[in-house]
Amino acid sequence: MLVGDGAVGKTSMIVSYIFNGYNSEYRQTAFDVFTGKVHVNGVLTRIKLIDTAGQEEFGHLRSLCYAHVDVFILCFSLVNPVSFDNITSKWIPQIRAGNKNSPILLVGTQSDLRHNVDVLIHLDQRSAKPVPFSRARRLAHRIRAHGYVECSALTQHNLKDVFDCAIFAAIRHRHTGKTSTKLSLLKRFKILCDCGWRSIFRFI
Image 1 (cartoon, rainbow, N blue to C red):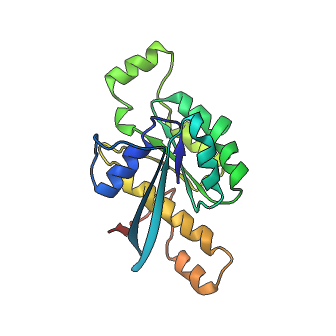
Image 2: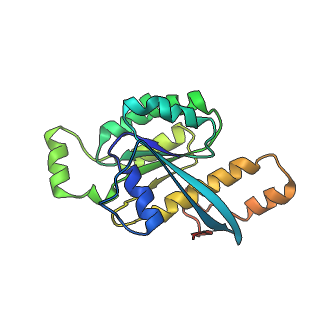
């Protein structure tokens, strides 16, 4: 499930990932569900991606889904410091109120705008700067996130890594404490660094 402030690029991420390209004509509703299949270590697995609006008026709709989510992709915009601050002040309390255990992947979106001159000027006028990687990484550790990834839906930089890492986190969480056979499968999905591991998923 993708969560985070409105206008941070959640819908663009999921549309770019599924349709393999940025689609400026797609229009989100309050609650969108995308289904598909991925190959996980050669095994065909069905996944469901849930995209929700981040505005306050949709809070009740989001909270109804939290208990059944396998993994949260918690998003903020790298060029919107307020959306970053809301991770701890708003989103973590909301998520954990409805779901105590499912893993969280922290994602910094719109990385293509980090060095955009117009964006930097706009931020400077508000005495603000893009969110540094080191600061976001520290937050990921503080909230005990599964990892931290920066991506761009427009250029697709690291976009596949986001969903690969989220799928891995969901699989590991589901199989924790189950049979040794399943656990041995998970051991083969070795993480070399935070989401910096080889691709083992293929969306079809």
